[in-house]
Image (cartoon, rainbow, N blue to C red; front, side, top):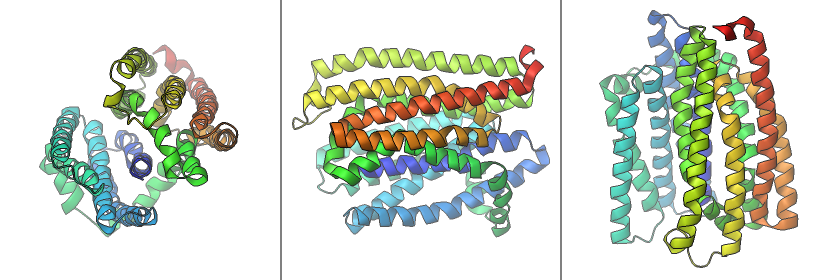
Length: 378
């Protein structure tokens, strides 16, 4: 249940990225300085309303999975606080204040570390305490974003600003959200289908096998948030060669991190497997799952720079079209592999979907480069 709720929370973060983080740098680059405060008030007011609805949805989801009222409330706080920080981080990056995000991340890491240490010492029986630690840490980590952020997010609310979001939805967020949902089906359909077809317990070893690839996920998310506003500025200034150079540097950085992970993972697994994995997990299942996850992340990192480039250019419709087909392929492949090979082989279905998604995104990126024509020589 804990692992599945975290998957659901990550999905919500993807939705918030589509609704707010991805359009934010594009909107700011296309707005006059006098218009930017209106854009920010629109996004922050809408964010506050939707977080309230999301907290209610998270509560109902937790209760539906058998959580106690206390655990459901803790998960709602955890998820709502995480969504607040998603938009705050995007705002800091888009307004040229990346060090605020860095300080927030350091505060969050320190708070989670202290919270986990307390949980280890107290060993509370309820899983809700884990969610509470994550939620409180996320709230504390909002402090480095400063008074201007708190004024915009909590004290400049207006129903008219929420209504103005309809234009953002039509221009950017609608297609962006479509892309996020279909991408979620591409990359996480195994979580939903394994849980649905085989139960939450069958999903546990699949989730455990992905644990050692977490550094790659963290690196991909962090670099996406940093590179997207930078590429948006470069595109706004028609510095196309710099954009392509940024995409290349983005990819090579991820390749280096992937190689370092590929070297360190076997070392950790061989030297001290008991640190990360409970003894009831089958070592062969974990090894097969880990190998498949490394293949998945390799394909994912190769298409990610082009995906971020298209987001920075505002090509959300093209991204959505690229991921719709891959989502269908991934869902079918995962379902068949669960029935034929068991839950761990569902990861191979994700690999097939990722390859299809990558092919579609690379094709859209080539189409975008052809439309800017001579700009590449600049």
